[in-house]
Length: 369
Image 1 (cartoon, rainbow, N blue to C red):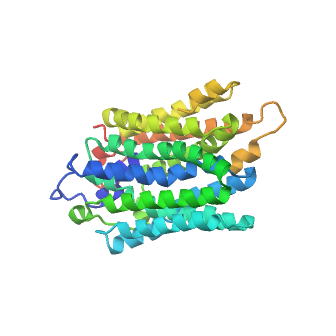
Image 2: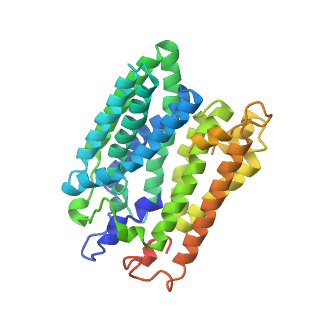
Image 3: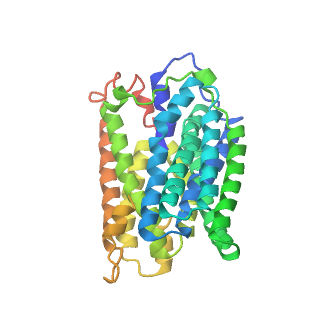
């Protein structure tokens, strides 16, 4: 969320002549479009556990996330060639994701699923989602975190809807037809969202680089990247192991949908670095204080406000199958919160992070000042 609001594209182009975000108007249509994109990309992935064998589920699910993010340089190149039409890579992504579902329904070998449900869906999600990341920060400043929180809630709503829909489709038809139905529905809705979304690149004219070594060498950027990497380890463990632990992923997706807009409001009020650090620490404490001691389904629901590693840490038949996976998730969130604390410390010391290091925009990284 903070990455979208504190767009590195804006840091590259701090011209005072550029009009500020309107904080209203068509921006809310873009919020709805981004909500739908999250709903029918990441939300579909969040219902992935409806039908999968444990180890294949782990590797294919990992491919979804990793390939989607690794696609970002290619997506940036496409957007850079025509920055006024971000719909081009998004439409490519919609075609890839829809093709993945249709072709996966005809799979007869496990490697077919790795290629379709793993690689193709990762590319599809990446090409559809990545161009939309910076859009809301172009339309909102005062309500930037709120708008991004509403948008991010789409993944929870999508996961909730598809987890029930896929199970129902499998029960009444077959796995093959459930994949085809999912592909057609998600493809149609993503096309509508792609048509509706609008960037302000023609006004802002951001500089875009597929891979910027100058940014990578900046200490505060490294801290954000390390925080993202470490915290996502805990997130993936929660997303997939929690569903196995609770035998249902619906409540985790519901918690995601309700929690993200609220966190957006809090971020706008108290600052993004502070909020991200506190919430990350809260996740760590919740794992150790609630998930590990949980022995009932109700307690697990309360908590629900690289899965391969977590899967290997599970100990079936030991009496506490998920203990090591739980400790792993808690420690990753704890480490991530410490990293965010260091980012906050660096941000509060202008002598350490000078104007050149922040692109002459140090006060705007946090969003709370």
